[in-house]
Length: 434
Image 1 (tube, rainbow, N blue to C red):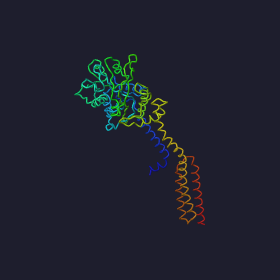
Image 2 (cartoon, rainbow, N blue to C red):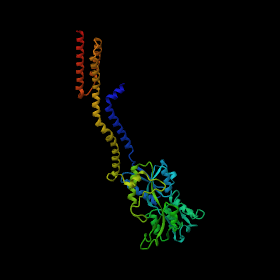
Image 3 (cartoon, rainbow, N blue to C red):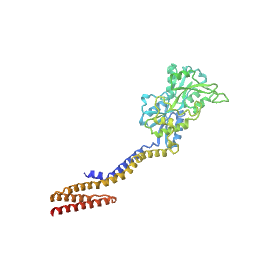
Image 4 (tube, helix red, strand yellow):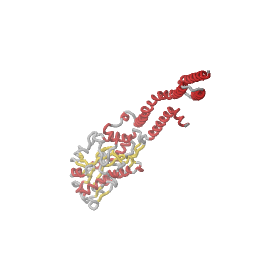
């Protein structure tokens, strides 16, 4: 009963307190859900396109106050393994198209494709030949183990029935392959690297090395939908010396920016903004603003990526620093219960409180009216004693009733009316005695 009385008498304060506590709890939860200040990005080997782009992402994210730690790896296959392992700490990686198995990647999503990855094929001029058929019986660098380069090179060589029995296939990194090719230690090298990669420029400028194209590029693209045909234009390396001396057709998968599903949405937007800054410029193989692109090979686009490609970054991120925009966004969410619940409640509480105070006094008035009805049907001294006792009890309740000063006049009026009824009762008793 005591608890019920407390709730009945103090429910406005309790309601406000509970609402304030709920808002405070929401604030704590939201502050804990702010985006992390550090992420780990799996890239590739030193000298490769992935590692170079990884460092550019680190620079872009540093401007927003996020430390992106770039992890050196063997390439796409290792990147995927690290992403699938929640204990690795890796939450974002560059992954080569065609290397993703959707059945093993349910925890991953794509932020879109970000650049072409030409599969360069360099040969020593004395080992020159046309297409992959000319590689039979040669020493070939196919990229390090667990790299996208090696996976794609082996798949193409398999199509031409070239295996480790037919040729010597060496798992060399881009840097090692370039060094050994220039030194004459190998005959040819596959490598996935950007046009601007130092090792690509070294090999394009070397007189003893020839850039080999893919005469069957259309067939490769038809067989592997994740591949694209790109062209190295004649003379683009050195117009004065006409290098290369003819257009060279290459094949190129697209690199995707892949994240774990649990990566904070704000970090995903930061990565997409960085991708625009890094990849949207025109290049040898791409048009201006061709990348990043809302394409998904083997993985669905994340919800944040879909919103980004449809509407751009969140409104506040265009005008405020990253952390400020995030904090204001969280606070705006906190204002919803305040504006939507607490404000109407505060408007309604005074009316409800006034009704409650008046009801306390009106209830006693109802009892007094009942006693007046009994008085009208006055039935002698025994009835008078009963009514007098009930009036005393009613007056006792009125004296114990606690109301604010604003309602004291109503309470005094009640007491006055009780006295009036008591006076009428005495008069009735006097008339009976006479």
